[in-house]
Length: 399
Image (cartoon, rainbow, N blue to C red; front, side, top):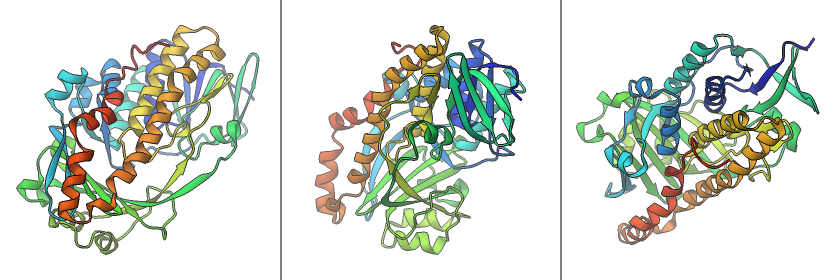
């Protein structure tokens, strides 16, 4: 059975899928979203939304609601693993608005996801279907048919795979592809801010760097909790899942000898989770006729540039603009591919570059580390690494 036809079918109701849905609904398109989960739970931890991401959220009318859940960042800094000495990375807060035209926000993924879902349902309550497992698609000159595990078939003009790093849509389009273990695993956890001393409660993000590992901390929920994400060079854990529990003792062992501020955070995490980081080569294209990919399905990247969610949000807005502007669906997706491929590839590569930068052997001793950090985080180098990301405007970039 083929149900009523929609303009756009989207597989996956994550951050990218919901942002795309909202942007498309606001432009008057008929959208149906198919999510395999039977319930949408609060998964993950923190997200850093740079000005390139927040200007899209603001453009979608979400500013007032977002300000109730985010933590505006005052700045970001680099800190040395052993002594805690800090180097300023960049100022944020009002400085970000003045420089880039939009704020820099830190937000819990679950809070942001819930806000997007609520915004979508206000426009179209039935837009998102849960427990709908996509297994494949067929396309022809007249449209595209999404096949669900239930046997149901959904017909649309366009199909968007926003179904994450293990995307079944990408698999059909381009094959499984080779996922390469990076040699890194990641710890994550949350700490209620009242458990920490006053000097660790500032509204500043910190990148603690050291040999073979680094840790990132930043506040969430108006400064009520602290997000902890740390990458370690280890080859004994290769499970790519956000929900695998670790232990406090194991996490502390990975950061033995590190500054007490880092160890205190780890000791106060109720449940530390761990996952392996797998790297994938960037795709050569993001679209094929009436089918396209978005977010992690299109360009999974390591979390070392803090741009994964931002790239998905940008994808969503550019996609919506293309589908609004170009009547021919295949032409709209060609324009989307042309607008997004080089930029998202740059983000994938930039994330890889930062992994080496954060774990450099020069960080082993204080004297060598100081010289290395002074050189690598010169203001001009920082601008080269981040301005291209923050200045991008998905609301107006040429299509």
